[in-house]
Image (cartoon, rainbow, N blue to C red):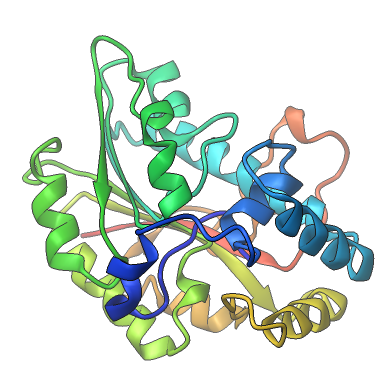
Length: 276
């Protein structure tokens, strides 16, 4: 399950955009529901409640993922000096979207969002609000169409300068792991030395209850999301220099006082790596 959605089959994308299908639950809308958002339908709430009934910890995972995104973006801006972000698989707008976090510390930051979920596209205007000094843009494209993503992003970002690529909860929608790795490689190939990869994904090996709940969800006919072993998540960063503390359960990545109490591992792993 993810807060960021894409069409699993690239060939299905044009038909998917014709209208928002409110008869089938969508992962982006369910995730929005768990985060306390209002951009969802009764079918999404029912699916979200059923999932949370089987595994109440999913709300913690959703909110921990969002908190990780905040911390990691803040680190990229304030410590690594990044001023450009390419957020692929944006999902529905909630509190503390990428541009809001980045521009809070660096008003001149520039952000390009990418998604092809029809309901997300309907809310693009909310995402496009930028500080006067910076810029945001929105690209309607499939995760699989990496050439289009990079070409469109270059209209807003200077891709000769370091850029942070954000893939948050999106790669699990790609059923084949090798294909998912290839997508990451192709996107990074379009970014210069000194750029960063920021990933967080649902993982296997930490919480068996989460794994059972997600496997059961994938059998319902909804768009599946595949939890991956931690070593496979680490594999996305091959050839990059990992930022301390490496690939860890997201509550353990540079925790801060806002988390409250001692952070505990969950089935969501991520990290940040720098392209040499």
